[in-house]
Image (cartoon, rainbow, N blue to C red):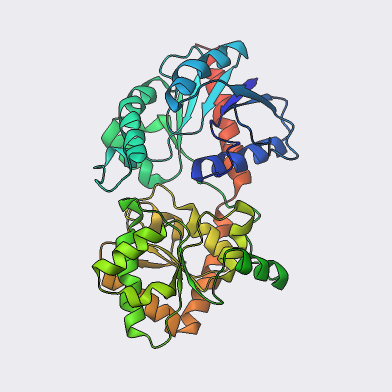
Length: 379
């Protein structure tokens, strides 16, 4: 069987969730050592092929925009390669393609109301998915999603038949384990100008990531503490922080909030390991990979009691109402002031991540490829 796996931005310099998940899946599929042939279909890039120790064939697909890559050049490439199955990993798929498609639909958050605070790029992406995904789901032979929470939503909102959707949880990369090498920790601290001990928040300015309530919660905690832990937030611009503090009359805390910017993937494990507590009170998540990454690094987690996050975190995180800044603040204060509770969540987290393995995800994905191909041959 000849399997094509589309990961449009696999080789861009700054990878995010979809590309990181696909990268891990590819390596585990390679380890399965099947007799199938794999073709990786990615956009042209000036960055190097980083699929180390993975001898899958890589084909660069033309297209300057997301739309023309996916809707025009990708189906042409699938035909040219004579694929038996095409796996599209980034939510959307070509609407006209002669090859059987397996679609990974991570979530349908794009169907929720679009916050006015989202950027034009974010809003365009949501509108594109609103147009394409309902049509693509009808044509896909199988749909993979990453949580039972999202599967339920897809059945309800997109009216997809239940047996077409397969839940395959993401895994946790083997790179995520607590760093104990003092030289690596110090190098990361110096590189990003980080404080000794801190609370970590990985989010951006999207309303879905709840940045305003996170800042409000942190400020409430800082005002109650004589020696508050600093907050490190790589995804929030300095201007966003300043505007928020000025609006809340809390500019005196500006030196307690660090904004190092984008963290290189190789340094992320050290960043987690340096942190004392991890905040992820997102309003909506189809999975919540950072929760597991932090747990794997031995960091206690505060996260939301909504969407897919309780499914992923189990009882290994402090679950809070993300709509209530006071609740988030109280959770921060409770964990920081109770070392025994921090240690309890640390141990629970290390145990919880064992349930999420990329090897298992690859085995289940391969099974879907084979079933789709078998059905195609026996139509």
